Length: 395
Ligand code: ATP
Ligand code: MG
Image (cartoon, rainbow, N blue to C red):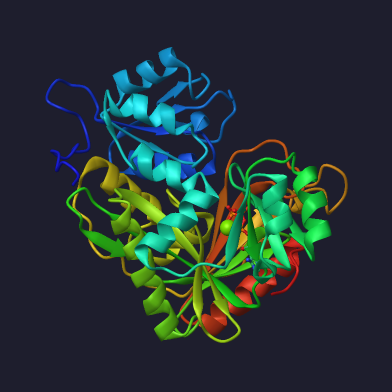
């Protein structure tokens, strides 16, 4: 059981110091966490080696060291009352070190499971939540003896994958062997290729007292392994499937004795059945719509879980569509051109979020656009107009 700790209340403390929340990692998720924490009256600290990290740029404190740097970690602990992480590839060891000094959520043990696809799948099994048939690949003998049941499949590196990186689709055993060689013979899982009817995900949050809340289930469209569009409105995901996804996500969080915001991604198969794909021990790209469509965002809830404040069930007040703004959109109107933001902002219910990244590269997440409105039809129509202006393919 987690210890129930006194909350870190926001604002200035009795000694004149501002209550401070810290985050490991300075990417866009860290930036939006910092914004949410600051809006509530916390000071913030970010640890990230990059001088121009999106979160470091907007935080009160930016500790610019490697994630494993002992001095950097102790400086972070010194200025923070509680610390979280914005990406799962922060070495679990660094979180363990911090946990010896300060309140840390989620725990290193939960992050360690999310870092490793094999450990993650074993956890799903323990929680009774079905995932795709899979095999662990550690040796050439594993490649040779893999069951036909998991072919054709997707070979995924067990660690460090994101946005479809470290994944190869393989038709047969020969292709599997060469794909595993191409991936450097690192530990992998081979997942059976499933016939997907749709993809969805759900953001849940759990407090140190075990209280759980969830956002509505969102429907996701990926292109080339990267999230492109998220749509969230009634009827978008069949109600029974959505209820099953929420129950599955809560079981996964409880099984980890999790504290914090957790995203659980699912596949809905052609026959209507639901299988879990993977988890992210943090807010998630597919939850960005909550910033403008719900009465609290996934980042507001992250702040509450970290600070030990009460959780209340979030309410979605508008149907929403989120469009990811990838680096591909820059330079479309001539060399060095930026997307036509003014034209997009002329549409009703459009909310632009840019992450402060200076280099636009293909596939790089530069920002997102949330569209809200009175009805799902209206939101969809506006989002399609925005997509057309920006050069995003219709969905
Ligand atoms: P991220 O961390 O950015 O969500 P990732 O690199 O961890 O992505 P996955 O979520 O494992 O990658 O896979 C990316 C996408 O590839 C999925 O959203 C889905 O569209 C497709 N995909 C993955 N596994 C399977 C599978 N077993 N069968 C069919 N499609 C799959
Ligand atoms: Mg994924």
